[in-house]
Image (cartoon, rainbow, N blue to C red; front, side, top):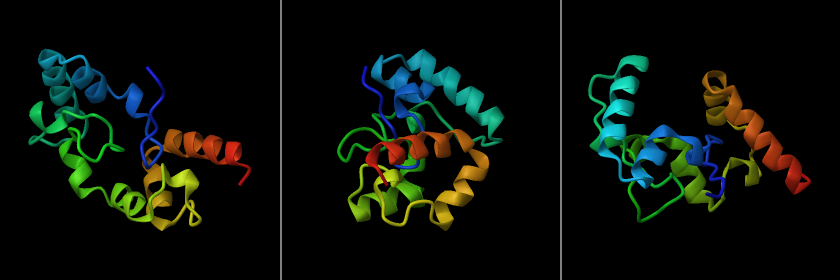
Length: 117
């Protein structure tokens, strides 16, 4: 499988929910939902709510969070593949996200370096 990088730099192709969805493995989705309910102290996370074909898809299955993700919405509005391709790279929204997910910064920095930006 090709590497899929989400708008924010998360690796969709390595995400447990994405992998379980692609494998059509509902039991794995249930396990991921249970893990995330505990990890994120979010009792409303369900297996159906995390089915995902990656945040870059416009007509596929997207996890519930995609509908409320400001970074994804911004990327779609700007028509960028991911934030590394944006002229306003590392904006305030993205910097706030990087505090919680520093690996996403490393991923996007690597993409941006490859663009010669």
